Amino acid sequence: MSGIEIEGLNVWFGEYEERVDAVKNAKLSVPKGGSFGLVGESGSGKSTILRAIMGLAPTWSGKIDILGKPVETPRSRDFYRAVQMVFQDPYASLHPRHSVDQVLSETLSLHGFKDIDTRISKLLDDVGLGPSFRFRYPHQLSGGQRQRVAIARALAPEPQILLLDEPTSALDVSVQAEILNLLTDLRAEHKLTYLMVSHDLAVVGHICHDIAVMQLGEIVETLGVEDMRAMRTEHPYTKHLLESSLQSAAR
Amino acid sequence: MSKLLEVENLWVKFPTRNGVFDAVRGVSFSLGQERLGIVGESGSGKSMTGRAILRLIRPPGMIEADKMELEGVDLLGRSEREMRKVRGQQISMIMQDPKFSLNPVMRVGAQISEAYRLHAKVSKKEAKRKAIAMLEAVAIRDPERVYRMFPHEVSGGMGQRIMIAMMLIPDPKIMIADEPTSALDVSVQMQVLEIMDKLVKDRGMGLIFISHDLNLVSSFCDRVLIMYAGRVVETLPADKLHEAQHPYTRGLLNSLPRLDAPKERLDVLQRDPAWATEESVSG
Ligand SMILES: Nc1ncnc2c1ncn2[C@@H]1O[C@H](COP(=O)(O)OP(=O)(O)OP(=O)(O)O)[C@@H](O)[C@H]1O
Ligand SMILES: Nc1ncnc2c1ncn2[C@@H]1O[C@H](COP(=O)(O)OP(=O)(O)OP(=O)(O)O)[C@@H](O)[C@H]1O
Ligand SMILES: [Mg+2]
Ligand SMILES: [Mg+2]
Image (cartoon, rainbow over all chains, first blue to last red; front, top):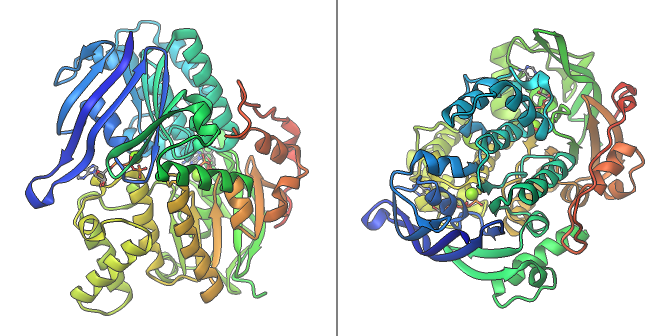
């Protein structure tokens, strides 16, 4: 079965001369249990695709199927149980006056879980935050700690599909390695499906089997991870992206 | 080399329910007209070190130091009013959460031109022209359009570049850049780094570059401080980062995923409690 199936997706903002076509005729398909990466230029529409899936894009057209069914507008509670997103901007996505404990218990009770206390401890442990972080507020956390709270919140409802927008870009490499290993384990244990945005091709290459490259609102190329590693690509922008990444890693 | 900034035995303390938490523990370093990188794991005190220099630690947090001087003049004893001047004109900081530092209900362009007009007495029209030029300088594709946007309408990487553009306005002596390029793809990243590099080379600015990207720091900076649990555990010339000796730094280097050398699982750091109690080294 397919996890995420997108075809002919257009997303735009504003009207008339103010109109911005943020995503144009995008097509991608992620099998259930698969892992798909979106890379490309800043402002090319990567976050917008994830937001459209979550029902956060005001105006769009095309097909978005999740687990074999077209999405409903507005999205149902069942949808949010099955699909969770880690946002690019963790500060903005955490309520400033809610402690870590409140954030997680709210999500858990919204989705009808009972053993909230044990689940919170487990979630914090999974993302490498000890019990001492449980009653902190967002401003009492470092950037990477906030990001881990956001990841814990997304994992809380035990979703089947995770949309990850730059999930590790605020993390140092050692925590990044822990989170990436966690994501690998979760996918193996629970057959999770990932759609992940990252500007770090090594991270995408580590997690994803297939990668789509975006530029100016369009998916210009989709390729397998082996092809990416071997630089087997058709499109000049993909080539440019790969070359500059390899260069920066070799420096 | 003339010293722009000198910091000796800096502590940042937060009183909490379970006693005082020391986020920064006795950090000493100096900064000249150079690019000084700070790396270290999440929560090791990088941002708090940067914020402490600008005295931007929110109460009840406290800053203590034996010495914190900007061009030989004390920063610790200055009034809040004097500090605001320092922040506006002499030391700029690009915050880790770019969008959070922008005013959400004001258009991006208006924020940049207003900041520019505070700094230079120019007409509105001139300020707008300058603001658009700055957006262009940070490789924003459609500066006229972005000028009219609200912060929530720009992408993550655009937000970072807008913050960078704003911080360039006052022509600061010191810039503290906290993860300034973490959301940028490599080619845009290069363009942004070039701008900062120019300020260091041409105008003698001092740059503190906080980042978790080891490769980037190693190629871009002159020197690196490596922080762990609020202390500086190692300091190195940036191009020698890959020869680092401290087991923590080595652990960081080994946990990087590599495009050319895939593996099933990444190495994770085995933290040694002794690292946290070692003496801070001076950078
Ligand atoms: N609410 C909005 N109103 C107007 N334009 C918007 C809005 N949200 C996004 N856009 C525009 O859509 C385009 C794509 O933005 P998006 O956030 O998807 O980029 P991205 O690929 O995620 O970039 P980055 O890597 O920098 O995060 C950008 O030009 C952005 O300014
Ligand atoms: N208001 C506060 N009260 C208590 N502890 C705090 C407060 N603010 C920050 N801290 C703690 O201080 C430590 C240092 O934070 P800092 O933001 O400097 O980390 P960092 O090195 O920048 O990490 P990152 O890479 O994740 O951004 C963290 O452990 C954080 O939880
Ligand atoms: Mg984005
Ligand atoms: Mg930080």
